[in-house]
Each structure stands twice: as C-alpha cells, then as structure tokens.
Length: 329
Ligand code: 8YV
Image 1: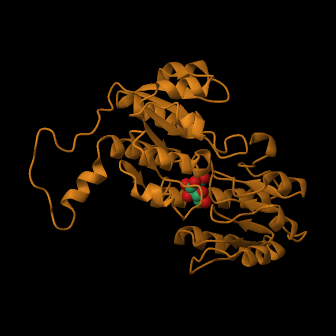
Image 2: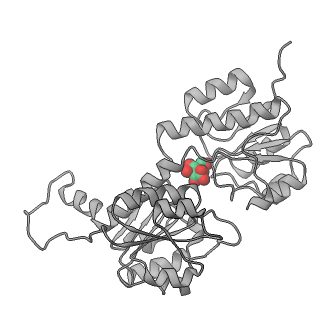
Image 3: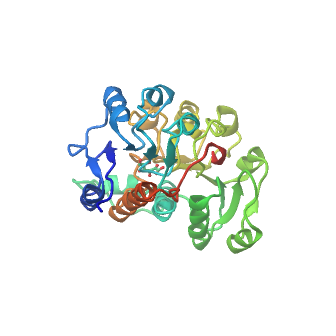
C-alpha cells in the first residue's frame, strides 16, 4: 500500500539532496528560485499546506496562523530558533511546531570563536590592509596590535547546547569561563568546563573581558542587553552575538561603539535583518557577518534531514522528535 504524501510547502531553496529526498517522500512544493516569501505568499501557503517548512526569514505570526486552513497540521521550522513563529497560537490551534536542534551547535560555536578572534586580534582589519592592492607598508612592533584572549574572562549568556560548545572551545583557548543562565548547568558540566555561574547578569557583565550571547530570543530576552546593561561593561570589553539581534539593544550598542565606550563587537545577527544599523557599519572594531553561524554545507544538509525526520514521524502518526511547546520557551 502506498503511503499518504502530504502537501509540504517549503519557503526557501534547500540543499539539492534535501529537496530530492523531500520530493521522494512527500508532495513537496519547493521554492526553486529561492526568493523570500512575501506575506501574501505565506498566507497562500498556510491556506494550502498540510506541512509548512519556514525559515528565519518567514514571520509566522498570529495573523498568518489565523489565515491557516484546517489542513495545516505541522510547521517544521528549518532552524533551531523559533522566534519567527508564534508557537503559542499555533499549538492552541492544534498545529504541531518542530525545529532542528543539535545539528548546528558546533558550527555556531565555531563562528562565535571566529568572531571573538576576529575582533580581539583584528583579523578582518589586517586582511583589508593587504586586500586586492596590498597597501601594507611593512611590519612594526607597535602596529595592528589587538588583545590577547588567553587568560581573559568570557561571560556566556545562555548556557544551552551552543553556549556549552562555545565554553568547551574557549576553555581550550585558555579563557576563563563564566556564564549567566536561567539556572546553573549540571555540576558535572560546570566541573568539566570549570565554569562559574552568575545568577546576576549585571554583576557578571561588569567583570567580563568578552561577552558572548548564546541564548534564544524570547519575550524575556528581548533587549536583555539594554542600554543600561551595556553600560555596565568594561570600556575595553568585546561583545559577540551569534544568537539573535533582538537580544541586544542595537541602537545603544552602535552608539557605544561610535563613542568608543566598548572594545569591539562581533555580530552575526541584527535586530532588523537584512538591514544593519548604519552606525554599526561605520563602527571601528566591529566585525559584522550576514547571519552565517550555521552556514556550512554539512550543517544545512543535517538541518534538512532533521526537518524530514520530523515530517516523516508525523506522517507515520507519531510525535515528531523535535516538538517545540510553548512551555519550553
Ligand atoms: C539558521 C539560526 O540558519 O537555526 C537558527 O536558529 O539562526 C540559523 O543558523 C536559520 O534559522 C534558518 O532558518
């Protein structure tokens, strides 16, 4: 007996191998030219699809979910962060929501370290000096000096999978690990990472050389790094964000960088992507990347496989492994 093939609408182009598999398993409607869905296209999609596969560029808010037909039963997000989806409204309407945790942990942690190194050791500035025309005037003992990271204090905000993966790497780089989280990690993990827990974010911020944002964006973490909190940072502190732009008050951060009240920033995410605050564009000691934390070929294939497993499990009548419930947020 042939298996039922649900209509699965995918909002962005995914790796070929993932799309091929989706076509085999489901009645998959793909977005081959990879344009971001307009609001109307999104609404059309939720009116037709049994399964919607959105990404970070789709806002599945109350209004969009309100337009969904009764056939929409699963939103299988291609991504770990689900701040693009109103999970509460979806679940209240009987729609299951899933994400792709675990498979982008190591890649995102790598990018966090890359940004720390890029800002502290001025890697992009140095690379730009050589550039296509090689404007290097020669070596000097006092030129292009950055900061040593060995022995410095790193404060991680959000000690989930990615935060812990950052801590493991940072420990190997000789950094001292500190963290703020809703609750302390298991004592065994704290011991392995030699990590100090700070219940008070304010107190931690005031003492760190480098701060890394690794928590999800939820109503509770929106502007967690507010203007007031950013001011608690040391004048030479570096701040790195590979999580979500909304966790930092971007305007306040840009102002402080402009006024040289901070050592630097490495940002992979922004409050209003793809727009970037013009002050940040001009800021010295800012390394800005276009949301590339999980952008590896392997990672994107793994994410696609996770989406497929979530959909397949649901088609088979079971609970998908990566269900997101409002209580988890
Ligand atoms: C993804 C991410 O590329 O998974 C996440 O939460 O931020 C990214 O690394 C993006 O979300 C894809 O939808």
